[in-house]
Length: 177
Image 1 (cartoon, rainbow, N blue to C red):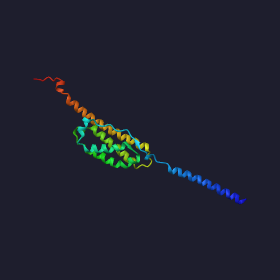
Image 2 (image 1 turned 90 degrees about the vertical axis):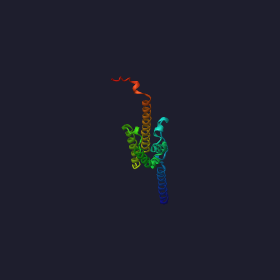
Image 3 (image 1 turned 30 degrees about the vertical axis):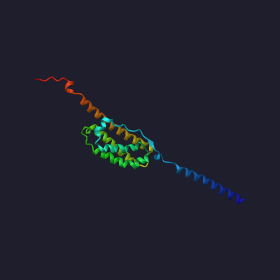
Image 4 (image 1 turned 135 degrees about the vertical axis):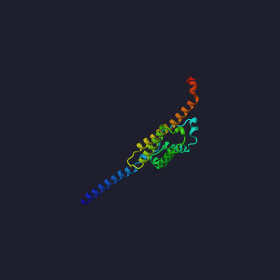
């Protein structure tokens, strides 16, 4: 009789231990959300006419080619590439040589772009950051880069309009002779 009770106690403890191991294994298998590729909205591009103005700005081209990789990227891949993006952003900001773009509004956009990239770089060091927060930050970077592109287009359009309009004939100025 004692053997039967001992047998049942051992059998129940084995069954209980086996069930708790399965639960632990299921928890380990969960996949991180930071490995899932996310398709982001692409940024606005520069008009063909405006492109002639920045054709010599190689840092812009390098930055644009690199940031296109972020259109379809997982948060972990973004963290792996953020150091190079940070370096390209600094180069983009420091290599501005086009006189028409040296306005406070344009420089502000470059500063905001740099700040958003730096924020993504800081996020790479924080383990509690979720994939949603990383994806939102990437979208912010695209939004700011789109704003930069739109400003380039607007500056080119403004310059073209000023060339078309001759203010001396538009406003007939009387000479004081």
